[in-house]
Image (cartoon, rainbow, N blue to C red; front, side, top):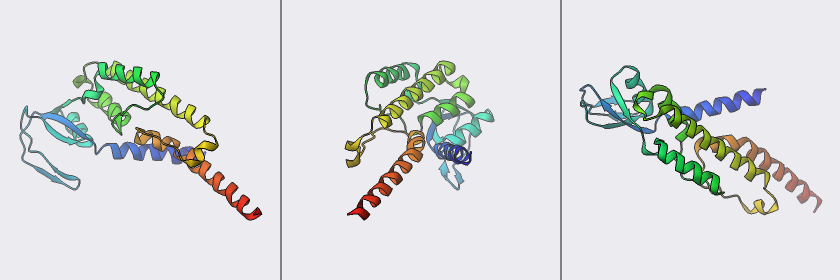
Length: 185
């Protein structure tokens, strides 16, 4: 029971970290540079795109101060091709390290700025599911060859966080078994 709480908090932490990813907005207000603890943002000029962290984009969007320009990878055609590639290959496709978290927040707070937010969210969820199944399949197929190392390219932060407990336990068991073997020698 405690393990689930710890894992859930870790997912929330990953989501929190993702809020620093840059998003392009189109403000509808004027303001010079804003100096905050996380950095300096702006200047903000009406109808002139500017990059800001996701948390600031969501804050401004909630206040009706901007529109969000969705990233190209969140377009329906791009997501459809990623799904096809993910399903047709054992290799993980390169995606932004926080694609799930970004898509979740954009679909929740900037729906009207997305071309087809419902389909985009469904496609991101499908990609996440396909990748999750690949991870599970890959972990089930680990054998003694994996003792030399496991190469996992293009995993996202959430996916790494998902397999971290398993990999930590597996490494612990391996080290325990290896220590027992060394004592017998």
